[in-house]
Length: 613
Image 1 (cartoon, rainbow, N blue to C red):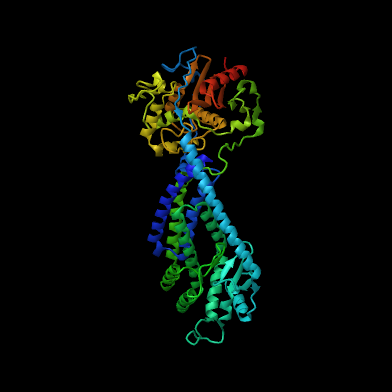
Image 2 (cartoon, one colour):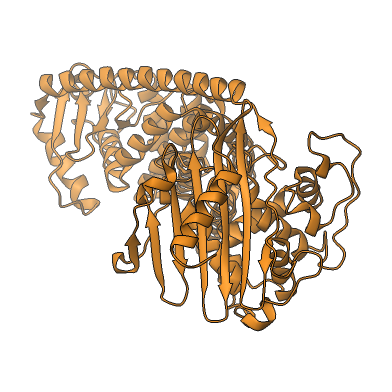
């Protein structure tokens, strides 16, 4: 909940920028788009506003093409080649010591701030819901007080309007004394409500407006109003109104979103005006505009957020009159421009969607799709004793998963230093480092671990888990490249807020043990389509033991919060001539849950399974 509060707050900064640009683009395109298309563009922004609450991260445009462009890897190197000594990393017949160095992070301020933001947001949402409930009760009272329309002439006129618009559904029409302007209300059972003053001032004995008494409405004016309300029905504007209400509830605190909703409502009325004007003769445009002017003097905004009507503020009326005065039936070219603009903005928003994702719904578990026949459950509770966690093993030859604690096997948590496997791979792919030239000079900062205080290359930084080395790789890569690579390989929840250097340490990036094993399998088979030399360099950097018959690869990770080890990882694989087994162990506790302990548990389990001695 606290994490969502912070992410949602950060998302709204981007939303303000995107909304501002969207409003400017709409203004530039104003004279090139039809009224209906200008309104339809708002649904693209509404879709983007829904992204922070989606249960999954949307696939962005770049990510789509990256995944589309994946090609089968070259496959695992032959076991005989892979088991050869790898320079200074592989000491034949001797297992390398596992150094599990990590730094402590603070949980206090960010968690409290996130919780406060979430409570404030939920309080506002509750208040907005109360307002909508109150408005809905008022609308219910109006429905109860309304009577079926009795005026025979207007009923005949209404029937002709239904036929003109080819609406076959029976849409009841009522009269009420509690309205100043006509409205269409009801999402599933739409009804039209006319104010009694409109009916009582109906003047059907005069053909010309000049002879009509002040304050009266002619049959043609009533027709315009009825056509307007029926156009709201035809274009499902009640559904659009419900969408706008939902957005106003979720984004009650964002003034730019509120302004956008106000403009969207105005464009809805302009689009509806345009739909009516398409039915009229050109000579009737002025009469329609005059109806709005005369009607605006006698009406006010409807108090019901669930309805659609002809009324609006004077400023909105001015915009609508200007639109009517300059209206021309849209040409094919103008419609084509509108479709092109819609497609371009849709593509841009598609590309921006992943930036706004917070995994607002259940994001803590990986949605794993694997046949139950391929899963063998294990009881390793004796090994885990005081720890919560899971052990996952995938046997490549038999295509079988061996799992302890299925619930935790798909539970996502911070990857800690196990992420450095892929961080190194990204650096190699971009040429930041090279297999034979991975040297990075020490920055001179004194760290609490002696192994960190000196010049490093990939083969020294990986076993000692040197944070500054991998943070330097990320700095040189840049946040955009890091994000693209994480999305390309599908690393966990793919979230790298608040930025480089910390997102994998008890922060936004999360991954489950099952996903760790799947990624290791993809790495081993090079399903990423990366340079095989780079794949082998990464494998060499995590090689802990190598002999003629077997090679053992692994990387630890420890999450330390307020100087307490709370999250321990050990991931890797054991390779023989005829098989490879991939594993991931994760342990969690209030204290003493570190990567070294996870590694000891893993070795014991592998020994019991006769995979490692």
